[in-house]
Length: 232
Ligand code: C5P
Image (cartoon, rainbow, N blue to C red):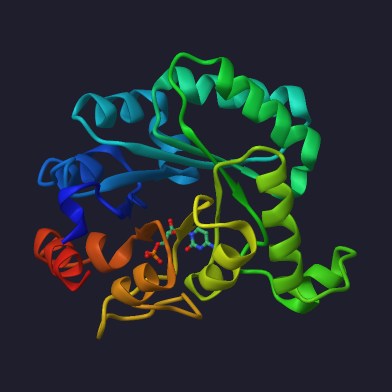
């Protein structure tokens, strides 16, 4: 099983407070999973919780999706690197210069997190992107932004598991693909629209699987994680 080398599952810690977060985290082992801290948890608990997770030995994906002028994004990426996170992300639609500045900031840091791009949010339909001035298929925009992210020096992108095989073909095996929208066989799909199982996503070429509720909302999260690991 591939987990002997490095954990591919990133658990989305979509909790409202530190207590419930640590209640789960204290049952987890850093050699079996990584952790994702998103906007809600970060706004509520801040860098101090991220530091606690890192001090417990976990790799942390700081999922704040930076999107601003190049200097500001570079400074935020520098701050994330100084915090010691393992992965950080920016919106690829912020453009080449913004991504290049982010790359430079991380390259200058002592600790260098993986720098990942967000292409088109999966919540946006063809109509939604037309309304903000992009009259093209979302898949075409995903492919265009992923290529721009790679050419701007990013390490990879977040994408749907259904986009993985095309993007690997287009951008090469080394370009890291991080996929939410993963559901173990038989699990509730919830608000995710187009899903794959962990083994399907990994076979398609996904490098890391972001999985939240199938683990965090389970009555036995450790069993749920172990089941996912053995399914891979
Ligand atoms: O609970 P679930 O497994 O659906 O959680 C998936 C996580 O991945 C959430 O934190 C969600 O915000 C994030 N995400 C996503 N789809 C994207 C980007 C991020 O579900 N396109």
